[in-house]
Length: 372
Image (cartoon, rainbow, N blue to C red; front, side, top):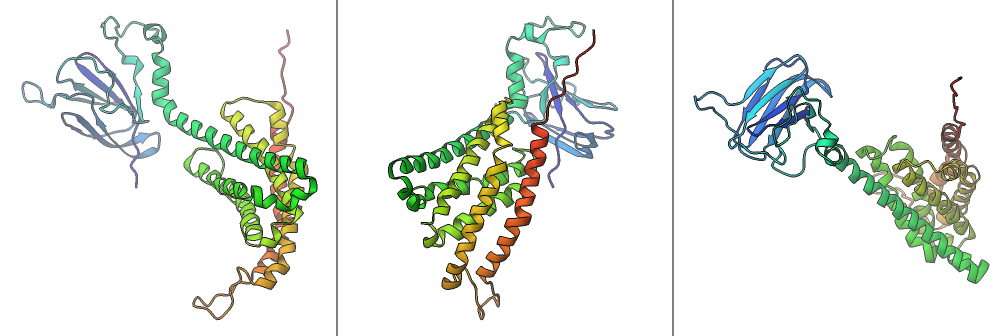
C-alpha cells in the first residue's frame, strides 16, 4: 500500500528553513532529522482524508541536528490545522532550492506568506507584491510546482494526436493519389499499399485505452477499448488473416471511413489540449459520425459476412476437439454472433453515446444580458 504524502509548504531565511505541513488533527507526529534529510510520519486529515501520511525530504545543504547545548535543533509545533518544522542551517546561506535534486516532488510548495528576499528587507508586516519583487519568478515556480508534470503529459498527448493525424492523412493521401492515377483499378490493391500503415496506427490506438488509466485523459477505458478492439478484430482477424478479403472493394471504402473520422478527431483533441474552441472542428467532430458511423458499421458487417464461407472452408482460427485443453471454438459461429451484436446493439450503443455528446457540445450557449 502506498502511503500518501501531505502538502508541504517551505520558506527560508539566511539561517533557517521552515516547513508547514498541511495536516489537521495530528497528535504525535514522528519527525526524524538527519544532516541532509528530514523524515515525517503522522496520522491526520489531509488531501486524502483521514489517513497515515509521511514524506522524506533530501535537503540542499546540511542542517543542524543538535544545538550547542545538546538539545534538538529542530523545532516542532503542532496546531489544529497544520504542523510546523523549523530547521536550522549548518552554515548560514541562501539556498537556491530546498531539495538536493533539481526535480521537486509534486507535494512540495512555496510558502509565499513567509518568503523572504535575500536582502532581508521584507518583514511579516509588509504586504509584498511577489510579481514586482521577483519578476518572472511566479511563472517559473508555477511551472515547477504544477506545470512540469502536466506539461509532460500535454506534450506527449499533442505528439501522439499529431502522429495519428499525420498517419491517417498519409493513408488517405496514398489512396487518393492512387485513385487519381489508376481510378477504380487501384481499389483492389488498397490493402497492399496502406494496410501496414493502417495496422500500425490501429495498434497505436490502444494507447488511448491506457491514457484514462494513467490519468492523462478523462473518462473510463471501457468505451475506447470496445471501439478499438472492434476495429482490431475486423482489421487483423477478418482482413489480415484472409488474403482473399484483402482485394475486396469494401476494404477501400472501410479505410476511407476510418481515416476520415480520425483526421477530424485528432485535430479536435489537439485543440482541446490548447483549450481552443474551433467551432467548425467541433461541429465536424460531433456531426460527421452521423453518416460515417453507419457506413463504417455496414462495411465492417460486409467484411465479416463475406468471410464466413472462407472461414468455413479453411477452418482458420477454429479449435476442434479432441485437444490438450479439451476446448472447442468454432470461428464461423462466433462471427455470426459477433455480426448480430455489431449490427444492432453495438451500433445503437455507439451512436447513442455520440448523440448525447453532440447534444452537450453543440447546444446553443445562453447569454444572459444584464438590464440597465
